[in-house]
Image (cartoon, helix red, strand yellow):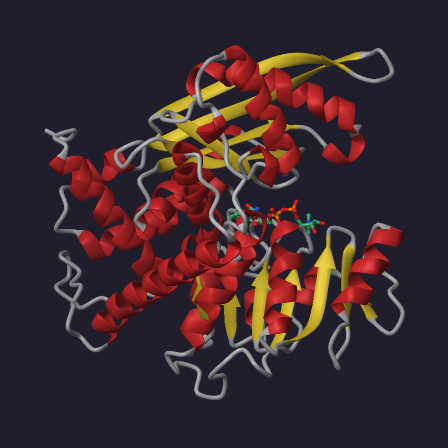
Length: 440
Ligand code: NAD
């Protein structure tokens, strides 16, 4: 058993260092500076629970980099939220926004709480109080939150309302994205991360890197996580003719070789609160789900699900990272040796922040685009991003672009897609930092 370090900060450092090896033309001090968060805001606040008792909660809002514009990133409610995790997720947002060319910097937030043990009224009080605590550091042109794990459009409506009450007389709609449609949300935002994930997957497959898997039609897909992202991705993959053979939620997974009927899965989950025990399926653990024989594995739940101890057993030909940080650095190396491609999170789930950007633009112009307009723009953006990363990856593969180890003079092996995407994003942020004169 490997003793791999699963600390999100360590992992994002390792990924950053790996990408930095390929951009050693940039000044070392500048690259080191780009690793640091711009601002960490930590708050503690008490909430009265429904039984009359009072409990203290801790929350964070972090802006990692603002060189391209205001901070942008989700707020998650989860018992495992830590400051380090929020910092590393904010950093990921910086690279994601830079890669997709959005005028935002990276940010993230979180409250340490267990939404499964809280009532709607308690969640509303937590959200309102957390928003008033971070009121000073968010705003339509400062830092713009969005949904993440266990937060949704209702959470965004509460944040918007609280901010609007504290800042009257302004168009405050662009302070958060992922709002309900009637409060200025964008058509397609709820589905955007899953939709973007499907767009980048079909574009990737069209490159014929996996000759036996030229398109989504007929592909066997396993998805870990059946929340906002996983359920939408499952539906859209199925609409493209893919067969969803495995699905899971936090209590475990289900498998059916012949393919799952998604309407029946949704109805079963609604009735029983879990996927486990659905008739006509085999129950599997979340660990077993990762190792199911399939073409495409989509982790759409939490981080570190594909790691040094199970990557060797992954049978999928392609991993599409709908979740943030689902694959560890050691797993990346094992997958690479096995010839399994990974579409990294900063591309695969960038659809969410892209349509968040469209929502922000619509809110400022007081417009509402229809779903066709949103999805046409999103597809173009996702295809363009996948094409750009693929082109740069290929430049390394064919030797047009070389990376030499300055210490030994040896040529480095060509980078994987995560490293290429990351190095492109870091280059963009570094160049903007130099152009703005932030780095003297
Ligand atoms: P969600 O809360 O709607 O769904 C999370 C899903 O993961 C649920 O089905 C839950 O049961 C499952 N889950 C929780 N713990 C698990 C565990 N230990 N093992 C297996 N499954 C588990 O969240 P979401 O919005 O769908 O986000 C999922 C992932 O996608 C997260 O990593 C998030 O950061 C990332 N992401 C989300 C968005 C977005 O727009 N919602 C955008 C970018 C990235």
